[in-house]
Length: 265
Image (cartoon, rainbow, N blue to C red; front, side, top):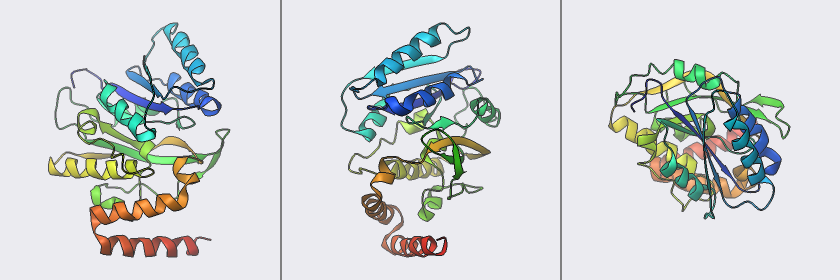
């Protein structure tokens, strides 16, 4: 961490995402904050995804103050393998994952977020994680609702025993820490949940601050891989929670999840 201002890596993992990628690209391109790296990891899409990326790179090169765009295009073993590649290739001080269809909430989102960090150049005690809230949008990017699970005022690794209270796309991590905890490829749907818990555990061991931005950071596309595989995702999430929190907590919390879903109908 050497810059006067932190460089923020926004990592976008794509595969045949032509229908949704443009909205994500535009939300990054319009940011008022200068120090952004947009890292695009494409798994050799066969539709028009890469043409959109090429146009984006060309357009950015003509901007008065362009941001960094780094593109890696090669086959991968799925979403989380591609995200591990992003961790290896990111050059920013912080990294966040913004997938195709997801957008930064406002054109000033990154500028406001950095303004709350109390950034200290070269200080190893800068926040391990900066997090915030998420809104849910439809396929056209129209607001549907605020995310049901609210980010807690204070976040630690045990917070996630109540579910993924912070959306992965609203979870900014110091890149030096993020690289130390790769995504576990044995999880098909919930490796991001596991990754966030392990990072928060590492932050706690090192007594590093975790900062609540008190902002809506992301507009999250309502349909995704986990949503479309809901039952398999829940089973995997149960096993994962048992690993981190023990079987008793996993059983009790899932009974509460079922009861909560009935109450809210």
